[in-house]
Length: 256
Image (cartoon, rainbow, N blue to C red; front, side, top):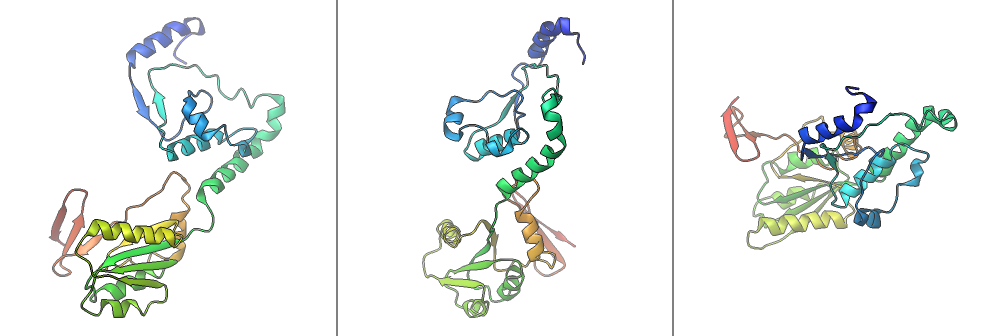
């Protein structure tokens, strides 16, 4: 450490002044020193006892709180001296130390990864006969189920869709309203029991690397705080010599 114990108070005061209001949001807060609002405790209760005698109970509590809409914040202007590992230096804890880390890691992953995952791909399409067959061949390869909302196609789109056993098709004839339709198909997927939803357009085709095994790997990340993915899309724009890259705020078109 950079200070003498007899000058600890002076160091802490200087540290606090130097880092005044240096607060930051975090995904995890270590349980050795936590300040928890009473409202959080009322909503979540205490630590999950399956992690006894210790290890990952703080990870679990932070993740549960964030899931409920609370934020985990580090008060960077507060100085705390922590001796470290004193709990596991106790004689009664030494026999547990080696096995606890592995066992509680597995308990933590099992708690949040979930079992019986169901991946549903959803489409909202109209007049997509050119690409919909290739798109559905790629999505049915890894999806448990596919839901297609056809917004009144006048070509052979619906006829093509009906050939796929995993696909449920619903056709409607309503005025254009993308927000309404997307909300409907999202809720449809939830009613079908989706735990993961992939949103796909009728002209989007996944490459061969998107297999059932790869999708299963995505649905069980080592970091259980991962709840969503963005797929990179390459759009062939006016032929295969031009591609379009979709960014957050605009589209960029350039020659290959």
